[in-house]
Each structure stands twice: as C-alpha cells, then as structure tokens.
Image (cartoon, rainbow, N blue to C red):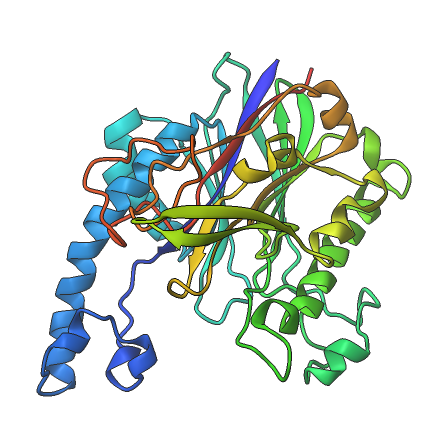
Length: 370
C-alpha cells in the first residue's frame, strides 16, 4: 500500500489586492513603474487589472505543476486562506484533473502578509486506499521561552523570549491511510532577510530558522516520545528557506555556463537530520540535481538550491530505501539556468521571468506504508 505526497510553495496564492506599492516603490510592480500614474485611485484601478491578468496565467501554470506531481496529498505554502484555495482548485485544478482534491485544511499562522500553510488531499490513494482526516493541530502559538529555545543570538537580533517561534506555523495533520496512522508536519521557515552587519541575509536570519527546526523536532519528540520517533510514520513537508549546498552558476549563454557545487558549513536543516532523526530524501538525487529554486540578483549572483523538503521518519526511510523523489521543473521561467542534461519542456505560455508556476518547484515521492 502506497501514498504519494508532495510539497509546493505556490507563491502568493492570494484572493486580495495589495495596493501598498503606491507609497512604497519597493513593493510596486515593475510594469506599473513604467507609467505616469495620476493618483491613488488610478493606481488601484491599474493594479487590479494587472493582478487579475497576471494571476490567470500564473494559476493555470500552478495547476499544471500540481497535476504533474500526481500526488494524493499536497502540502502547500503561501496560501492566503481556504477561500483562495477552494477557488483555485475549483477554477483551475478541477479543469485539469477532475474531482481530485476534495479535502482542504488550513489555519491562520503568524505571517505578517497573511500567507499560510495548507494541506489538500484526495479521499483515497491512487490504488484505492481511503485517506481519512483525524485532526489538525496548529503550533503557531508556541514561544521561544515555552520550548526553552531563546538564546543570546536571538536576543542580539532584538527578539524576546516571549515572541512566537514560527514565522508561519508548524501545522500537524493526523491521517489514516488504509487504516494506518500517518502524520504530516507542514512548515514554512523564516525567509532569508536583508544583510545585517557583516552577515549576508542567509546567515543574518539563521538563528530563527535554527530555532524553528529545533521546535519542529521537539514537537515530534513530545508527540511520539524521545527514542520512539524512529518507528512512527511521519513526514516534515515544506519550504525551509535554507540549504546544505548550492549549485553556483557562472558564465553566460554565449560563452557557456559553468556549474559548481558549493557545500555550506551551517544549515538549519542539520538540526532536523542530526543523529538520523529523519532523512532528506531529495539527497538521494545527485548533488547537481537537487535544486528546487533558482536564485538570481543578476549575473554576479546566481545559484540553484534546495529550499523545499520532504523529510521522512527512519521507519519510512527503511521501508522506502530505493524511493527517489521527483522534482517538477516544467513550471520554471526561461530565465532559470538548467545544468546540462536537466532541461525540460516548459508548460505552455511560460515566460522569461513570468508567467510561471511558482518560483519554487514541487517535490513529490511515493511511499510504501504497509
């Protein structure tokens, strides 16, 4: 008996407009910046039109990427709310795959922009086993002090112990698949911040992600018991906003691109995998072929990296020792530089930068759980 599970950061699946760009140039869309706009009323009218037009293309591509995962269960990040998810599933995904993802769950987390975690699932697996929802638990309320995770590094960043650990949430979903218990921990860790002092954005925000990773591990240990987590069926799914290695991109399209794998000395991911607590199954793929996001600030700063994870418990890892996850990259824009041999045929109407399915790639794996 098997289940196919996927994670996907769908990039701002919103059902509301953001007009803050009128007063903040950093939040203004580049297309509107080309025009002389008379006043805020005109800006709002143009922003509505631009957003709706762009969203239709983008969500067709998002739906194609989800359909390509062939997943029974989808862990999603950057979902505005259940209303937005239901509208997307009915208006876009249903037209491609029919009545598939009937069950949808989400709850409001801590994100300042209101983007939340969600889980969307079929009522049965591809081989006909029932997927039964039992309960959903939010851990958005947990503070650094509550789990004894406050430290000097966090204090130096101006973060108090009474503040909440998770920048979004750790959403715990208990299921039964074919009658067998299966638990999902949906996460979306702190994004890499602007540089601070002599630290780049990744290292400047690292203490928060380390605390989030430690909190997820603590939640799992308290749930199943320290020393007993290895034998349970659970998976951590989501965007960890961190990586253990990068594929640094050099050169250009005319003289040829160069690709170099660079290992990182520190990663919040290590907190979760240390001591064999769980396995990052994407690391079963070759180093050059683990990436789920292309980062670029222009020709001087380009790399491919894994930000999206399926971390499975030791019992699942042993039972699925030969399972290798799939990464759906056909929704990536044409600006994404692919290493040799990894090129794919993009979905119809993909643009150079946009429209695209998302800035992230979905990751999916089939797991035997019997």
